[in-house]
Image (cartoon, rainbow, N blue to C red; front, side, top):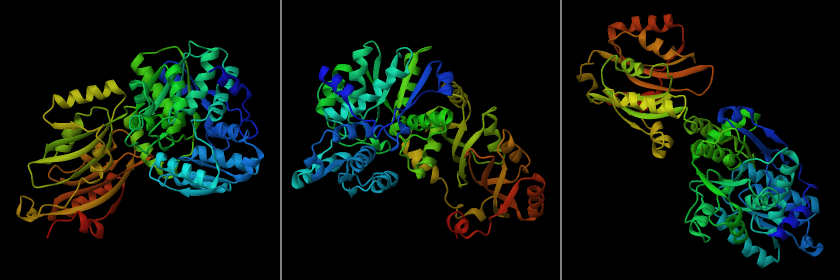
Length: 513
């Protein structure tokens, strides 16, 4: 391992890489009661640490190797590192990327004049094809993680940490895909600070290093999740396994919601947006601090990448609240009667609704999908206890992927076919959209001002963090009270739109013929 240490000291990276800052995360430090520092590898020109290892490897190729060209396989960040290095070294680069690679990464590689081939559904399929082409065309393959020179290039981050920290930290948290980053950093850190904890972080659905260390052999996963595409690797390398087995003190698994919460945490501290793999270390650090009750310790997390598709932000924002225990999602059954929603809301105390989806059926009870604002794990437990002691049947679906990804958007349907033969035979359904100021009590104020005999038949609301809340509501009112309804919506003072004649509503939600 001493050879690696010398390789790190001799690594050539600063022709293309920059020394990135080590910044204190003040909000995270206060929240976690520890001194938290972020190593900002997301500020590299290619928005990732990968440029270090790629350039260090390629700078050591012979002139004939460079003239022949290089090839690599990558989910994106290593691809950009190789492409930029090839541009710097006047070399042709061929990059194979999985078909699932975010477009922002594909375009970034093309903009660096590299040839891009999209192949395979995951990194491992792409890797095998790249190896085949490299042998067929006699191209030098630049491995994304399992190469001593690549590992040494990533290790230069640790040299900078030594220079930037006035004292050694308690732990350094590092994202793990194939293991190149954690290998390079741990090799150097354990030489200068053997007591410092090296803690790797992986997604629950892409935990090849964790399983390999647990079973003391390299384990190949049958499949990997693609949310954190930068670490979606089925099988770690032999070199990285050997180094990890010697120097990694602990591995932590995190879920998608925890990753999204970490992206939000970094944004609130830096106003920068990390990609999911880039925020892994922060998610793992938070989880470790919570589970181990660490306090007043110096922690470092490597913010290793920021190649985020803009289209993903909506999903990230939606799931971040769940990841940091600021929202709980419930499936609740309430009586199908006027005023039941107000009674339900009283259980929430001062907590706000964040989402509410409901469509009247012909049963005695209504099934609703509801999101509720909570203030941490303890408050979530308190709320669930309130519901357990109430008359309502409910299911906590905060961790149910089917509900969070699909069922929440499928709550609905039409009014029952026998609607006009029921107790509402003289009623008509009106559908309105409202905007109201997003402040505590606005929704309750709306409900309290409705007449008690006006039954809610459709309700959907979602808090999107804006200044105004938007709801769509269907009400069943006596045909003789339409004038009263019109006066109600005007006096209420909220902006509104009558959607009763909306063709889409009539097609999907209107009463059955």
